Image (tube, rainbow, N blue to C red; front, side, top):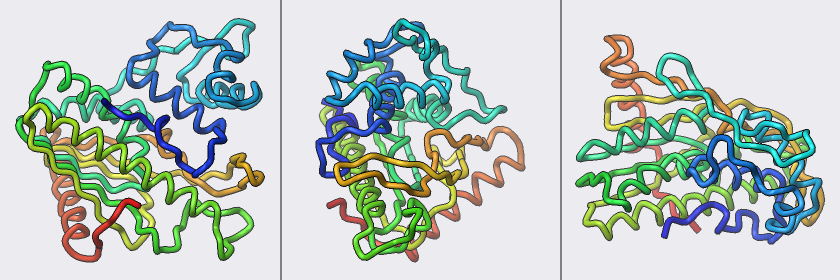
Length: 292
């Protein structure tokens, strides 16, 4: 069974935030459970499903509309899933739109190699849902999959996310990020390891960065580099103990730029240097990362 982020508590609480509702609906859209033109359940039905007030559902739907994933949110009837922009190499698209088809194409190779340096595995989990579905359905069958993930160490002082009013001895924003990092890492590892049941040799390894990555980088099969800048913004999140005001990043919304070795010498040089940068970090200043 493929696990989704909905199945994992990311903050040790049963309370569901508008952001988590939006993330869950995003994953359903990305996984094809909700297709373009489909109507969503009513706000009352969604509020009942997630155990929240309708206001939290309205916030989540509003965020998805801003992302271009929903239409008719403010109308009287339930919103519909919008047609996502067509992904392409020439024009950058948000990470949540453009990463999935690139990773799906990478899985057509006999030996799949994915290297990623990022803040969390938030974007990778939904992006892998389609190739995992194709493998479980017998459509594709790579022989080997190697995945290496660089994530920030739990012991460093992150540049972001951070509380707006400064860090204290018990930083709830850092604890929230750490819980998300670990939970999403566990989901990613579990989903990939399920492919071993198909006779595929799968290896997934995490290492800890001693700094906060200002960009997210994905390297696919040594032939393509995808890079996006983390854009810092101020936002709020409701918790059982109150409202967290933080400077956080819009990871899934950040534009992803593609560089391919077949596109010419300039792109090929970028891919090669990006791979050297990643390999150097992996082999030198990073440390073993244990997901607690």
